[in-house]
Image (cartoon, rainbow, N blue to C red; front, side):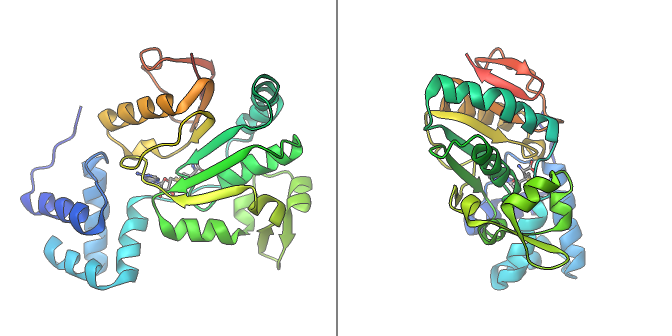
Length: 263
Ligand SMILES: C[S@@+](CC[C@H](N)C(=O)[O-])C[C@H]1O[C@@H](n2cnc3c(N)ncnc32)[C@H](O)[C@@H]1O
């Protein structure tokens, strides 16, 4: 069910965001968008959505702050490690055997890069040097961080220390940089999964901890688009709080929790 908000000023704001910032918020949960926008209005001491719109259009930092707050970027390497183990031990070796070495992988909503670099680490471990990883996000700020590849210790809390030694250069007590062998494996680009066209014939899509912000209807369309973008037998890897209830209707089967395979 779609939650409704009856506030013409807020409706006006959402329409302006679409026109002026080229961001269509209609698929996002409206109460969440409103709550977050209202916090920013107060923080920036603006009284109305019109004043706040003026501010974000005239100040690039404030615009970034708005886009940032709306699309939380929390992430880490090997988030839910047991799922990455399953990929490394089962699903990737199987796919490499079935399909050959040129796998196509998409990390959708990749934030600052921890997820696609985790893919890259696993592929390195499997010596799958021809697999191609595309990583996308709507937020150019996080994509710039991803390309820099510099992370604090917290991002590596779920990562095996031996992997840290192998694939990261320690810059100082707090910061680590991913080695070029990983950087060259991932192609980062800006992409809005609710608006922009998808690549086709993918073997794996990971879209994790993103759809929680979307309305049910938007989620269903998005999942259908993911299915269309996968090859038959391709796998969709979702976040650990995200179940796809109508997976059969979408042409998927569950291979284990949070991994769905296109039939
Ligand atoms: C919580 S992070 C998830 C990062 C990573 N996938 C993970 O699970 O650790 C959610 C990311 O989704 C991105 N995002 C939100 N809406 C998006 C959209 N419409 N298209 C592409 N990315 C989007 C945000 O910018 C943010 O970086």
